[in-house]
Length: 75
Image (cartoon, rainbow, N blue to C red):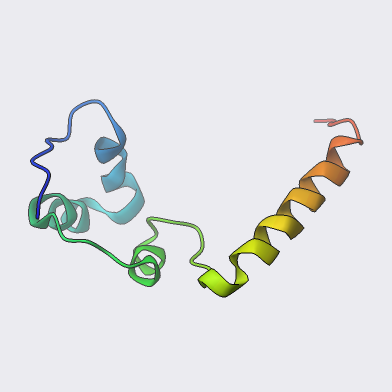
């Protein structure tokens, strides 16, 4: 069931840049729900991770980010 939200000044306006104008129109007009694998294939999200692997992925990412925080960033 659609939410009746019109694109105006928010994330929906960026959608065309992410997925292309035709697909963005389809997503907005249809108000369909999309699974993570489809969203990843469309370029809407970076990565779809199975639920069973999510905790391990988040832990590894947090550890990697925390270890790099100790080193100063240099452009």
